Length: 68
Ligand code: SF4
Image (cartoon, rainbow, N blue to C red; front, side, top):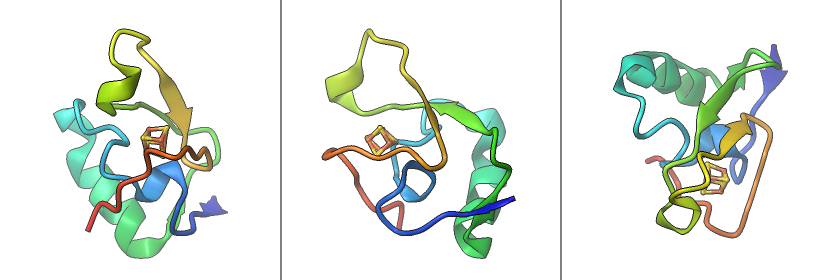
């Protein structure tokens, strides 16, 4: 497990937002502030549309939007 800080993909509203099957799992990650190191989720940021970008919980970009 790794700690996930504000500003990282794991805390971003776009992290896995188009993957409803993982929604509950992502809530737990944000509440606990930790996640499996190897977790990847699709990024739903409109600027990345068409790229099918998958990002790590520890990734980051200027499109970060707080999940809560
Ligand atoms: S790549 Fe950027 S927009 Fe996508 S989940 Fe990470 S911080 Fe959010």
